[in-house]
Length: 187
Image (cartoon, rainbow, N blue to C red; front, side):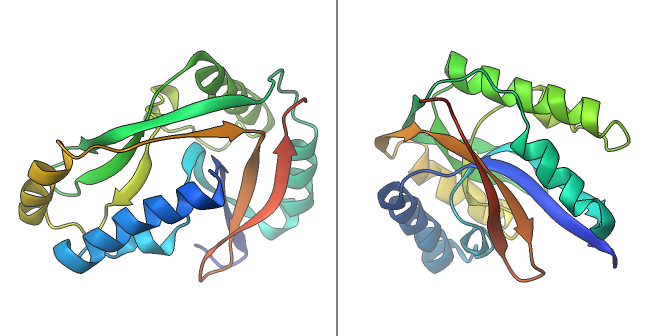
């Protein structure tokens, strides 16, 4: 993060109960596979990847977020089993959210609106090819240890469902991510 800039992202955050379950998987990776990085971030599904804005643009970002026009009612997301991104240098293991039309449409609308409001900030290819995931191990997961961990987690079962009533704008305070604004879906 550059001096004079804030770091933000937009995400769905499940219920506290599910967050605790996901954190248990993160802790397992920490204890048994020496992968700690995911423990630093609350369980979430990223809708807009992290981006930086100058301090002076903070209020304008809040205004944009509050005035988003998202035609969505609350909806459910099913979490089913585990997935992985097999990047040879930095593999990722995640809890697998089942893609559904409301989730897909919500993410696309946020990205569309963000591109209009902030054309100077690039949108990542992974945001355009949205693959929802809830990371439980990444960054410091050694590629060789990933192979061992993935052998176990690719057959491990997990299932949960949570209702999405809103999504969140988070800001990094140089130590951790904090929710600074919530957009509630129409009820």
